[in-house]
Structure formats: structure tokens, C-alpha cells
Image (tube, rainbow, N blue to C red; front, side, top):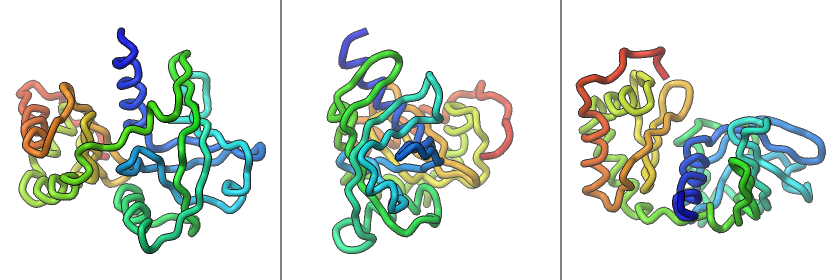
Length: 214
């Protein structure tokens, strides 16, 4: 496997695991994240997290198999230039318990026995400009297709799916309880390709029987 493929696999894992554990000052608590258009992470945070000098995020949970992210937090406000980032988190996860917000820069990462420079994982989303248009059209016209894609690709029957994010590596679909990730292979290159990829993901007639709804 080439270095580029290894890094792409790490990025795909990160985007597929937006719920994890954050460690700071010997405390470990659950956290939910979103990926910003520039590749940074965003989440509501506690004041103690902002003051901590050593902060690590474990995805999807704190164990030996987790992706470990050494991060630096920058407090942002839920208004002005950063309002869209906070709204993005709400679209994915609902209303937060904490009222402060932070942008997480990834300094370094450990995954699958390898170390990564944080910048290698913080790749801007080239579909960011088209993302909102793609989501609006899918949610208005292609909900049945989206549900079929969730069932076939992620083996989750999402009764009322809502597309909330698109990047070259896949789709983020919000269900009733959580966000379902649908991987795209090959990578999505533009807006038209996103619709074509979704149709292809939903087209398998041999999709598995429906598991519990998400």
C-alpha cells in the first residue's frame, strides 16, 4: 500500500468516526465532532478543555485500536465568521450541552500503528462549495435513494435520512440517533459525480435485509 493510500485510509477513518472520547487534565469524557471545510475539527467544549495544555481525542473510543489525535483548541464564537461552523455541528448532532465552541487543529495522529503529521489529515474539502447544493437536492428529491444507499453500503436502515455532508471520500447521513457514514469508492470528484455515486451505492438489488433503524 502506498503512502498516499495509507493517508487516505486514515482520513476516511476520521470522517467515519465523529463520536469519541476527549482526554484532558486526566479527565476523559465523550465528544462529538464535525469536520470543517478546511479540514479542522469543530465541537462544543468545556472551559477546562480550552485551558488544558495536553488534549487528545480518541476515535471512536479510548482503546488500543483507536485513532489518537493530539490537538490544539482555539476558542471560536457562535456568531460572525464562525457561526456556520457551529451550525454545521448542530446539523449533524443537534443542540449541544456546552455553550463554548472550539476549532481543533490536529498536531499529530496515531492510527493503525503509524504516526501521521496532523496536516496530512486536515485536508480541505474540495466539494465544500457544492456541498449545500448537493444536500438540498438529495434531501428534497432523493430521500428514498439515500435510504437505499444507507442500507446497502452501511447496512443501516435509516427511516428518515437527511444528507448533512459530502466530501470526496463519502456521504454523512443523519439518522434518528446518530450519523451514518457511506463511503465512496472511487472518490467523488464534483457535484455531478456525487449524485452518480449515490445512485450507484443504492443500485444493488442484493442489498441486505434491514437491520434496526438508525
